[in-house]
Image (cartoon, rainbow, N blue to C red; front, side):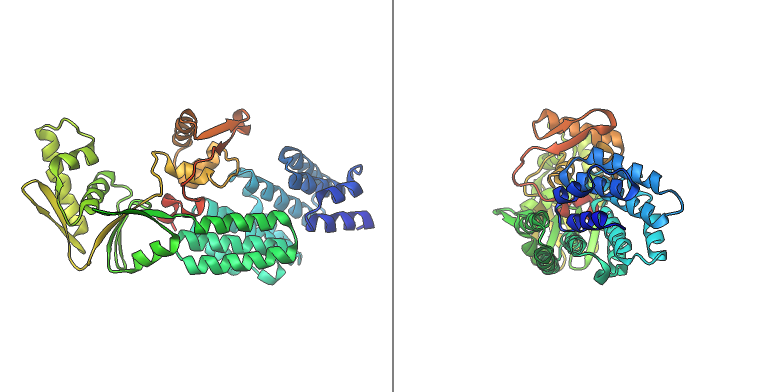
Length: 406
């Protein structure tokens, strides 16, 4: 490798793309094309960066598998930044294996870190954790080590482990300082602010207040019966019952929890569960059926008793009952939570991350756009979506839907 290529690579590693371009901007050989592509990515021109990396991969040819694999890894990183989480990320595993087989430990480890970050974004926490555990941390470049600790913090936050998240962020801050790249330090600052932001809202009969992640963790570890509307589960100690697929039952238990120790009138339950403002006998019959199903579901830790007005929740061992809700509630809160990371998302990537159909994601985006909460730019496959500033929404690290899959 000649001296200009070496100098350009060092400049890119230090986060100085302009210095790199000064050395290779007029060259068209494969290594120069690859470095120009990475430089353009650092400058934010992702379209041009992808073109240059594709040209470099073709120019290297099959006789240079390591160089081609490095181009694939760079293209995957661009896809990750542009939230194109499907096709462009698929060759990453093969590229990682090729780099490892040829002794390129640093780039193989970097490819593993990128895969872990993708898995975190789409909510596959167990898989992300396994990839991180298999990584050779010492082989990672300093900038990638910061990303490693940010992924570790993200996993801890979604698993509601405040101290583990804080420790990972502290490690991320140290490595970002050692790398000396301002963009990395800014990313760590954003993640730290997300950790300190309200994670949920506590709702009781006479109380409603915001909680931090540590407070949520302490509440879940207590002997309270927790109806968690952030994740659509009911918790009592180590017992967790998911009602994510049973929205009527969850609406009923949430209404009962928010008025505990008092009872809830039948009329209120009909509105909360069925949106029946003018209920007839068929609605009341359905309410009796659903209450029976809820009794059976909650039998391990609570009962439901009928009163003259309606129904009341009777926990078996818990000393108190509380309801947790997102800091602000919206019909499309999960989409807003992903968009809140400040990146531009495609509707297909949102559908993948939320495990819904592309059409469902598109409808949510259109509704948010009508309400002035999201905006799009570009057309067709190049269309991307970003959130307008919506204070109070949880970070994507606290997404409700993905936690239930982790």
